[in-house]
Amino acid sequence: MVDTSLSVVELFIGFEYNEIDKSGFTKEVQNMKKISLVVLPAITIALEILPLGAVCIFAPSPTERAKETFSYFSPIPFGYANFAPLITAVLTVVILLLSLISLKKNGVFNSMFVLSIITAVISLLPLVYGLSYFTFVGALITMALVTECILIKMQQKMDWFGMNR
Image (cartoon, rainbow, N blue to C red; front, side, top):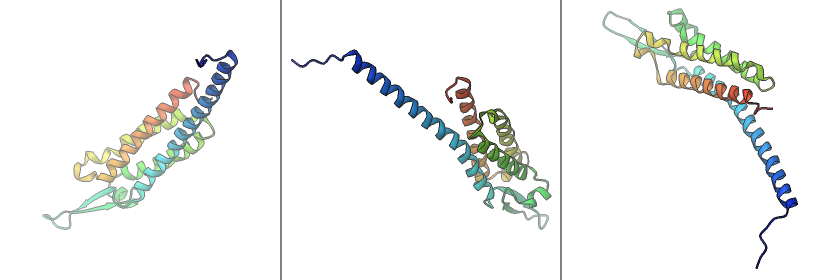
């Protein structure tokens, strides 16, 4: 008959090993979440650079309409009273800078969260002009900003419960 009982020392060593392993795993997950807070705004900025997001509809004649798309960073839609794309792009750059700061300092999550919500709402403003002013790329940008809000809130909750220390 084989003895399957463990001694107290073996249990203690196993418990300590599991605690160290869990602590390392938790830190690894936290670092990945903080890095995702940087990657998501970077992806959003890449989408905003594409010349497919901001829409202007021109009327060359009374019966003809020409739809042109521009980058979110382009001043042309801003000049034609479509202010939301450029404001969204600038605020996304600010979110990226704050997320880079958050890698070293945990105190910026609240301002990042508020700014992300404001930016997500502003990114929806072209819908005021109609669905023809909102593109698939614009929808992806809005979804990325909303996802950023959710990730920031998750990171805040972990800070409140002391999981990031």
